[in-house]
Length: 105
Image (tube, rainbow, N blue to C red; front, side, top):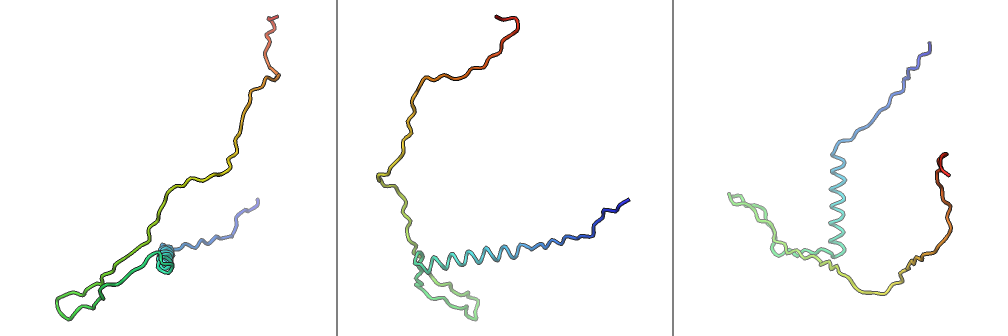
């Protein structure tokens, strides 16, 4: 009898979710950077931040006045060429198929 066992092993490398999360965060950072770089977003810092004092009191976050561009969506009328398909009715001869019983004439 022949032995059909194989010794081939398949190694599957599985990656954890950390790499996917890092890629998503990197893409988000690039998109935000592009929005600021192109001027679509702009931020004016109106109050500077400060580190907390050595007291019970906490620090202060900077105040930011955020301005974003407005996206306007609408419609406008214009003239374009549109093809029209027209159908006509004609009388033509078509083949017919029927079944004839042996007893019929």
